[in-house]
Image (cartoon, rainbow, N blue to C red; front, side):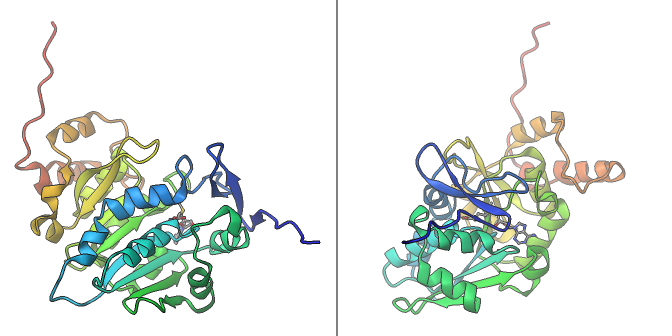
Length: 300
Ligand SMILES: C[S@@+](CC[C@H](N)C(=O)[O-])C[C@H]1O[C@@H](n2cnc3c(N)ncnc32)[C@H](O)[C@@H]1O
């Protein structure tokens, strides 16, 4: 008789949403990866469609170097699978390399053990990634996937510079360090002056301020599932390359709300650093030519 597969591994368990799909829940924090939207739906909407990955891959370019996507973190690989799916649908595009970061591979192992709950998962690719640290598509010579195991903060310095960053870390409650100004400064530096864009599910004021302080231009991202708004960050080179024209950059209205916010500062900005941080945000280039915020009519 076939034994029933356990739905737990290490710090993870399979979570069944009442909507009918499964995702992975971290036991220690209670955080669910892609909680209210089916993993592939969110992955396609928030990361693949927003980045216009298909268009970027299909565009004929003299630059035949691979388009590099940072998949931070890998989790149960929905975002990576959505990028692979997109590549396979684009005819004869530019090469693409997915670079996944993960410090606990048990969530991917668990998803592989419970395949019927994660039908999107390509077992051949995921097993090769776990066993060898990389996967090369047999059908598409331009498509490859690399794993950087361990702490993202340590591993990112060894990774090839990104064109896109799918920033899908646990929230500030669980992974506070990954949303600090210092971390985003390092991510910014790793973009090495290239036109890169970062996509993330958060729309938190403090997280957006951390991205701005690191040097990114910051725009509103689309809604996805229960999230009314998400966030896109652009390097200055991406901003100048014309990509910004398609993005809804935060304006001085946002700045005015940030000034009044009780959550203005990322976790690593202590009381003594606040005034310098405030000046960096107020003086950010992106607000220079932005229209003045609408004045509230006085009722007195
Ligand atoms: C929200 S989940 C990612 C979900 C994933 N993108 C997917 O599509 O299934 C966040 C992942 O980041 C990993 N993580 C947390 N801290 C990390 C760190 N410092 N370095 C690398 N990975 C980390 C977690 O183990 C978890 O798998």
